[in-house]
Length: 359
Image (cartoon, rainbow, N blue to C red):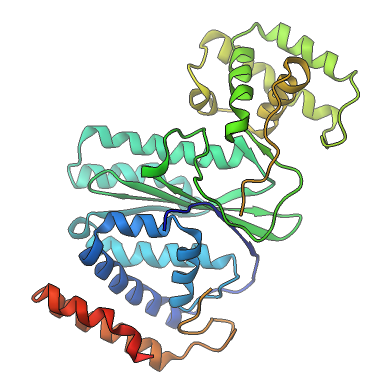
């Protein structure tokens, strides 16, 4: 349960039928309440941050184990299931897919104000934005983020589940973060990673091996823009290593000069501050990383950081169709258990541990 990281999933068409999604909401609500009662909501975040547990959880809910839609559908079901109980549970889920992902900061602030949480919790907005910026800009693996969910509790614990799409190979990649395991947002934030597919061309500026590169890039951004641009012109005349699939346009991307002017006038204190600069995109950062390597001998990591279970079938009928009767029995059993558990917690938790006997 300690591992966090990524999972690569093929893109599938279609969507979860309404009858299945409604059941996913009810079953996930019951499971969350059981975990919260038994172990606390912080433990639920730890489990969400494990890509293998998350995948198995999606399968328990009846979604396709190897579909990219598992991420968005499961997170959507979790959000719908917990929103009415958020204040009582002390568990808040923000964000979602596409436009909903961009509303994450607003939703975090909404819950902070509604529940009267401490002022220091406003830092969670920055955590959310940085997590997205890291996986979209500092970790360049070919996957463009389109889904972002931020989970946090009344105690301030947090986790992130976000997903990106690679249009070339038609795969999606899911990124998991667990706040209590993140010592620094820009140094090995994914403490353990699992994946079925590894990319050959990756620029990982948040790897431990890239710390020297981070320092060099910071130093570069504090220099006069004219000097940096002059060095980049020199690079164009170098014979680049075979491992760099870069075009000349990548060496001086559009907007780089504006970014350098910003950093020269207001030097960033650390790599996190640099990533937060508006307008700093993957191409700009890649050009600075290349300059850092070729001129200042500070190479960045190019190692891809990426590394099922069935209970109710899958929506596409694999490995077998969803058995609605069994699914409804599971929901009914858990909901009945929860209603009694609130009165007789200890004895009813023993009943929950015998749940597997139903199958």
